[in-house]
Length: 317
Ligand code: FO1
Image (cartoon, rainbow, N blue to C red; front, top):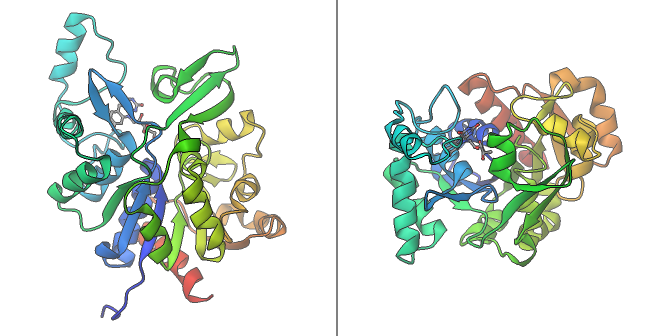
């Protein structure tokens, strides 16, 4: 039986890790109660098209249409447009499948015609049948820039995809974040939710940009008790991507304790995996409550149980 007033949940989200958590969240509470506030600082313009990788990864995953081999792009993809670009000598290191291109064409056309990114994101989500709300963190341009150890600065996808995040880095900055305001609906989603969740996304380059937008950080700080973060680091490693290496290179501890230090001003609770149970006291010493459970989302059941555990933190307050 569904309760008469199911809780509203807002999830601060990056790409793949957040998408998996959201698959659990829409099973733990009715999907219309769930809002994802999604990083846009790794958006790019390529071949004249506006590409929003994290918004698309979340939309496709919730629609059960994500490419299972990559975790991004669409299921059943073909690559003929890339073959044509190869013929013209246009760089194709950032792979856009033929079906996925339809999304970027639609988004770019609508933006050029004057629509806002939030409006277009809703159109795309609705057309894939999503009941959850997907919101870009901002409609203003924010770009993650990465300074490599040789002193050169590259944009995020250059570092992440072209260089395969295999080069050491010195620093990260979010150009435009200082002046950016949260996008339409974000402020209300963060204030109306009974629980705000920080997904197990990369704390530096996925959640970092969201927290660099002043009114998002402020919304979390003012209701810190209701904010529950999930550690993307398990047993000292990131489950996917370079989060552990990035944390180390940028002077953070690549552990749940390092994650606790990053989130302690905005979250009151950190959820960590059983594998890190022996570090729970150190998380508590950083000023956060610590919940230990299974966080490695190998299937929907684990993801759903993780989300129920997160929501129980709210109920027990
Ligand atoms: N990741 C890759 O490693 N290689 C790619 O060629 C690539 C293309 C791509 C196209 C569309 C899209 O939505 C995502 C894509 N990604 C690709 C993933 C993306 O670079 C990252 O997952 C995010 O930006 C980090 O969250």
